[in-house]
Amino acid sequence: MDAIEMIKERRSVRKFKAGAVDRNTMKEIIDLARWAPSWANTQIARYTLVDSPDVISKIAHEGVKGFSYNMKTLENAKGVCVLSHVTGKSGRLDPEKFDMEFANPEAWESFDAGIACQTFCLAAHARGVGTTIFGVIDKDTIPKLLNLPEDETVSALIVYGWPDESPKPTPRMEADEILRFV
Image 1 (spheres, helix red, strand yellow):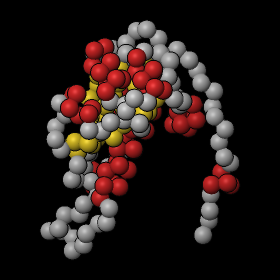
Image 2 (cartoon, one colour; image 1 turned 60 degrees about the horizontal axis):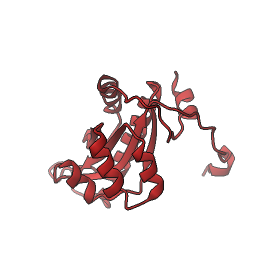
Image 3 (cartoon, one colour; image 1 turned 120 degrees about the horizontal axis):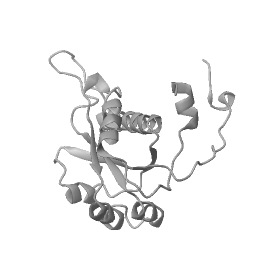
Image 4 (cartoon, helix red, strand yellow; image 1 turned 45 degrees about the vertical axis):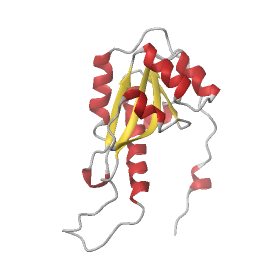
């Protein structure tokens, strides 16, 4: 599968087959996802893979702010990637090398986490694993449920599994509608 095909064919999958994705396949996906670029190669993305039904149930009932759409998907999930990022690194310049500060480093943390998220989803797609990304999450509760390090912030939940659906592409704007030349 080439890159163009991956970009055009990857879809959010919310219905999965009964069997869980094996840990070796997930390790291969993380091995690919780790190549995502980041600010000054800080590599702040962290992937906590949850395949315990009990923990997934806790995330469903305590970690998505009661959002029923996400709860329903999680109740049938066999795997959840909790994507987090190490805070305090991205978007900052070494003061010994540079006589300036960069504005809004938190935006760069989110940017790097977004790149890591997309890379994870494309790597999963390349291995035949479906994914969907959740943004309605409780970023204070989830770290406690999973005992994440204090210097990490949860960026997103990515539910994954063997797809049991093939969603059709949603309409996209034409390139001329979103493009400007100056």
